[in-house]
Each structure stands twice: as structure tokens, then as C-alpha cells.
Image: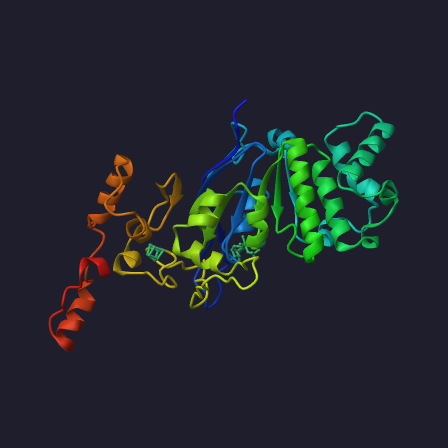
Amino acid sequence: MSEVLLQVNDLKKHFPLRGGVLRPRGRRVYAVDGVSFQIDRAETLALVGESGCGKSTVGRAILRLFEITAGQVVLDGRRIDDMPAGALRPLRRRMQVVFQDPLSSLNPRMRVRDLLAEPIRNFALAKSGAEIDARIDLLLEKVRLPREAKARWPHEFSGGQRQRIAIARALAPEPDLIVCDEAVSALDVSVKAQIVNLLHDLQREFGLALLFISHDLAIVEHMTHRVAVMYLGKIVELGRKRQIFGACKHPYTEALLSAVPVPEPGAARKRIILKGDVPSPINPPKGCRFHTRCPYAFDRCRVEEPELRPLDERPVTCTICRRCRIPWPLPVDTELRDSVREFCTPSPAWPVQPPRRAWRRFFLRGPAIPRPRSDR
Ligand SMILES: Nc1ncnc2c1ncn2[C@@H]1O[C@H](COP(=O)(O)OP(=O)(O)OP(=O)(O)O)[C@@H](O)[C@H]1O
Ligand code: SF4
Ligand SMILES: [Mg+2]
């Protein structure tokens, strides 16, 4: 059996916008614009980034809650993005979701027993009522709730207990992958820790793969194996936890991590405050999408869109960081050395001085003085 459970290739989801009297037709929200990653069995991949960068859209696209615009979603070697609904049904059992707000994701008119029995019946996982009851008891035990809980309604529980019911419901069809979309964000600190530990234990016990969508980097650092950092519909850096938290390469990751509190009295990280808001996904900036806020942005970033390419065994998009942070003299590793050479050679798409600005400068201040190469 292959280790890779889920493979996402160049996933795109563009939401069409309605036109109006003053609004042109044909506009789109580029919510997810070319995202690729994979999740192995029993692995946790965290998806982090600012609000609106497309994290939930990736999660919903994987679960096929809507049709995607382009790309591929492959579950256990089978492509599911273009699969007809009938063929997809048995595979839906293998992918479940836990949302942020359990009160709105659990039907308030169903008792806990019925909430947990529904997926067991739908996927024909038990033959008799007694078997269903036995499964429900086991699920409640696994999420550390008393058996008596099955006779109660969702509104009779605290937020943390409700999230345990939502987790039990996700576990009921015996899935391979659970998408946790901000599953612990609405809980207070102590309950959050309990639910995170519960997810950790269940993952080890059942060999579950988790796509853990969150903006809480302290929790992510605690529970994930790998981290994908998203910005405006794209992944900008992806790597193992120690690579991202210990030696990130992308300026956006650097800024995100600078906001994580250090659990040591008196110690503090140097905060990097990004100026401005995230640009609109309706009209994302040309070149590097982060250039409008990046403290290191230079001419080339405004023109050329960097690709996600491997650096130090992990994919990173930022080209300048690739150049600045590689130890000098260049490493012996030939592949890395070649990629640095390739970067250092200016591409034809990179005008050193855009013509309009060069002419303006000439008329206003005289001829432009070329900047040293290290400044660009
Ligand atoms: N059905 C939709 N129609 C149009 N635009 C949408 C739709 N769903 C999401 N979007 C847009 O797609 C972008 C990404 O949304 P998404 O919910 O994936 O962000 P997110 O990263 O999960 O944010 P948050 O952290 O706040 O949950 C947003 O700009 C959002 O407005
Ligand atoms: S490519 Fe340029 S703008 Fe983008 S992150 Fe790197 S330095 Fe910043
Ligand atoms: Mg979201």
C-alpha cells in the first residue's frame, strides 16, 4: 500500500462574480490558484495563512463540496475531482470534516444518538440496532464523553463537549482523512489543548491523516508533521515542522512566525509588522503576489511570478530569499548551485528599468544611475 493518501495537483478554484449595472461581467475571485501538496497516511499537514487566503476553499475542494476549476485531487491513487456522484459516494466515507462551530454543524433537532447513528446507517457499517448502539458507545468512549450523553441534545453541552461530538461523528464512518477546518479556534485555551491532544491520540490509534487548517501557529507547532503556508490563493512555502519553525525561507512565513509568542519569560521574537492589507483575490497583484507588502521586494518581484521550487529539500516560491540566504561560497550540491545560477541570470521578462520610469527619471532628474547588483 502506497504511503501517499491524498495528492492535490495544481488545484484551482475561481468563484465567478455576478455582473451588474456598474460592475463588469466575467470577474472572478481567485480563491485558490494553483495549489499542490500531498498527505501521507497517519500524517498531519497544517495549512496556515491569513484570513481569506483560501485555506477553507482548499479543504472544501478536497471534500468535493463543489466542483473545482482546474487541477486534480487524487485519493489513494484514484482521481476524485471528476468522478460521478454515484462512484464518489463510497469514497466520501473516507474523508470527513470537523468545522469550527460545532453548534451550527450539528443538527439541533437530533439527539447525540441519532447524530452518531446517521453516518453508520448511511454507509451500512452495522447490521442491527444493537450493533449501532455498541458503535455509538465506543465512539463516545473514544472522545471521552459519558454514555449518557447519547440521550441529550447538542445545546445541552459546552463548546468543548460539542466539538467532541463533532469529532465522534467524523470518526463514525471510519475515515482515512479528516479535514479540521479551524476545529479548535473557537475554544478557550485549556479546552483547545484537550481537543488537540484528543485528535493526536485518535490519529495514532486509527492511523488517521489530518489536514489541519488553522491560523493558530502555536497549536500548529504542537501537533503537525508538515506545514504549508498560503498567501492569496497560493502555497508560498511547504516543509517539515522543524524546517518551517526553525529556519523558514520565505519573508511571509518569517512575518507570520514573528507573531507567535515565545513560551519563555523575558524572551521575545523581533516582530515583523507587514504594512497594508492582503490584496483582493479578485485582482491579485502581478509578479510575486506578496510584493505589495514584502519588505524585501525589488523590481523583479513586480514583474516575474516566482515558482514553487525546491530549496533545502522543501518547496519555496521566493526567489530573492533563495539568493540571499544561501551560504557563500555556493554549496557543493550541484543541483542547488545550478538553481542559484539560474536565478542569478536575469530573465528576459525582467526589465531592469521599466521604460516609462526610465524616461520619466531622465526628464526630471537626468540619466538613471545603475544600482549595484546586490540592491536589486
Ligand atoms: N462561494 C464563494 N463565492 C465567492 N467567493 C468566495 C466563496 N467562498 C469563498 N470565497 C472567497 O474566497 C476567498 C478565500 O476564502 P476562504 O474561506 O477559503 O478563506 P480562508 O483562508 O479560509 O479564511 P478564514 O481564515 O477567514 O477562514 C475569500 O476571498 C472569499 O471571499
Ligand atoms: S519574490 Fe520578492 S516580493 Fe516575493 S517574497 Fe520574495 S522578495 Fe518578497
Ligand atoms: Mg476558513
